[in-house]
Length: 119
Image 1 (cartoon, rainbow, N blue to C red):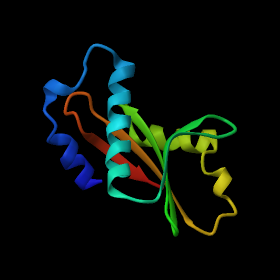
Image 2: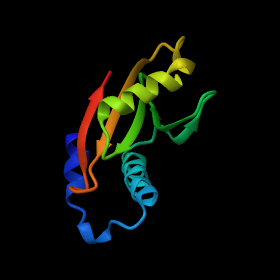
Image 3: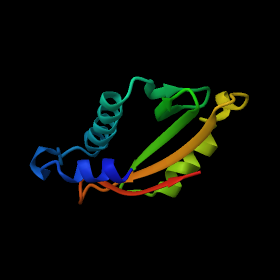
Image 4: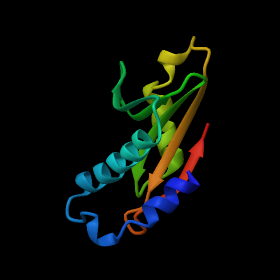
């Protein structure tokens, strides 16, 4: 997360859209997805559908599953709460891999990750 935070901080503020909050959140979501996709050969899902909603990003490796929920100008704790309420990890209940639930809050002011928490 520290590396991703540093990378996002290096992107000039002038390339981020400011006029549409939904598009602005999508910018962070898509940039995060692209970074993970370029760095790995493992399964990566964006907006992975479940029975109760869509997880923003799910990253599956042979030994681990990382479930990400993103917020813009919210809180990492709120993102973790959404993972729990929507049951994004339930499909992995009998999976032998270690499940990581990660809430990430992006800041529209700094243009990078403001806070992240893992459960």
